[in-house]
Amino acid sequence: MLLEELVRIVDFEGFRPILSSALAYADGLKGGRPPYDPVAMFKLLILAAQNNVADARMEYLIRDRLCWLRFLGFDLGAPTPDANTIRLFCETFTEAGALHVLFDVFDHRLRTNGYLSMGGQTSSITPKAMKPG
Image (cartoon, rainbow, N blue to C red; front, side, top):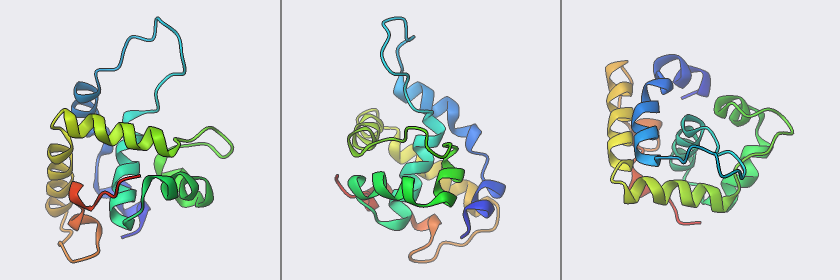
């Protein structure tokens, strides 16, 4: 499935409440680098699972593939998540019990829009497909 098609059939902003609840980001008053957008990070996990790519390889591929940059909403030359950030994001959702919920909702939205599950395609993504860093 093309990424443009995926964006067309799945409202990723609809995932923001689940993402925000599971992450419970601080208010930012203590300073530090602001976190990456949770919707972009969720999309990143989808790409990683779909392509069966480990965190370190994802770090490289995000910068290498312009279509991935566009899909994730990152600007060319802007900072992108490193392998450790990707791993921590995935761990946070796993510990919060939200990763299965997110992927179940994602799979349901694909099926609702007529996308059939077939081996190796996006809708066959599960958190089990995630590889450790």
